[in-house]
Amino acid sequence: MKPILFLHIPKTAGSSLNKSATDWLGDKAVERDYGPEKYFSSSLVKQHIYGAGAIDEFGFFSAFQAEQKAWLSGHFHADRYVHLFGAQNTISFVRDPVERVISEYNYLVNKHDLRQSFEEFYRSPAETNKQFRMLGQFPWQAFYLVGSTEHYSDCLEFISLGKAVEIYENQINKKYPTSHATLNAETLTDIAKWNARDYLFVSEARAYLEKQFDARQHGKAFCYHDIGFIADQHIIGWAFYSDSEDPANIALYVNGGRRQTIYASEHRPELQTLQTPRSGHNGFRFSLENYKNADRIEVKVLNTDQTLWCWSKL
Image (cartoon, rainbow, N blue to C red):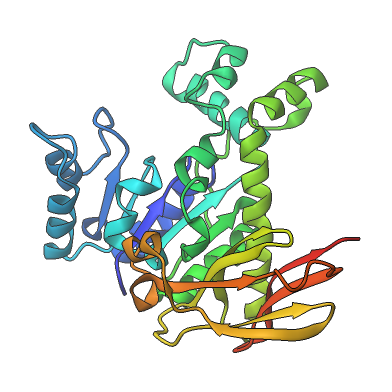
């Protein structure tokens, strides 16, 4: 198996996943980056990332490969390592933002003797929209899986089957209360307000995950994709199949009829940095100049008839 990068957003069942991966791969194959002060950050990380002198991410990854490591996890932003491991070897999980904030606060109070008030905690810059800042502001749609704690078992099966690693579900760090019922409605609303960007990101990630599950249920390869749209002007996006050097064949449908087809073969530098198939040549675009009166526009990939995006006036 190729080495896996697990971006562990706090309180998204990551400790359970790490325990399962360590049990399967062995402790010597696992590296951890949880900051310079954490005793469980591993030796290669301490040497190359937090040692004396400049941070050497490439030196770390070279040592990681030389020692035949298989798994790196930690509380870091995606841009620290994803360009080394590649998007298709990167996984993460998201969670309801309010539940996640409550869970992290209770954990820190009980486990690390946090003295900060709850209101100060959830309003602090370090804690607001944490999931988006760690993951969502990057091209996360190209990552192998951004799972959801609400579909945890299904996500573990997805990882196990796709990455040839036996991951099972276990219970770690679940003893601290996280229920909304412990807080009044005003406080819950305030937490949600301070994490509005997280809510949007988590909603997008869940919808994307449902597409992945639907493709698997129907026995079809999933087409990884992202699409931008400006009405009456253009559609610009990218699409690729995992481990395939063949460009995805993209079709534009207007009012139910197919109007254009194009291969997703344009160079996208940000995807090349993430080591997507075809060295980042996964882009495509459609002009909408001739379809300004359209009531419905769809983008599909013809290889598997997967709908990538849909827009309607109604």
